[in-house]
Length: 204
Picture 1: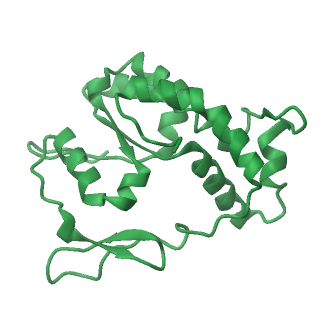
Picture 2 (picture 1 turned 90 degrees about the vertical axis):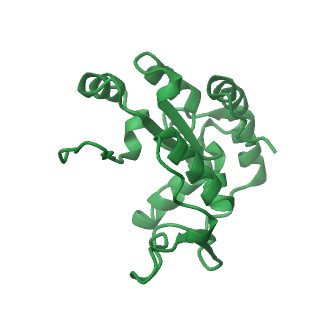
């Protein structure tokens, strides 16, 4: 980590921290004052997106359906598949709450980052105790990608848009498979809403 001077905040980003068993204890041992920011999105969409990413690197992997179910006839979901496992947010949060109080964890809605990036980043700035500098005027929506782009400071380089690995077209998944996953995640989502005090609206 770079040295942090008075008045600076050092940030580090690794998506796998939230789901890695050893991470909460290690981070707590490093600094119990660490603030944690976790971006979450609808776990069904997240699983399909995860699969799409893997598919782009390994085109010969089995179908989404065959990886989702332990038993297709009974509809038993395979929770050992990481694409499914990661979206059980309440379970992962339990591990973090053994070390960090909820006031040190901010959950950011992936959906709202797209529909209202300035609003979500306003919450992030408040959480970090920063002045709200990033506002609506710093974003424009990229129709091609389907994501907002961040405009740099006046007179600087071109806007920052998400890279080519983001915004890929998802494969068509049978509606029944999607519905089975929705039913599977529902109780975990409800518990997660209770734990965080925020309704993310993934059931709508």
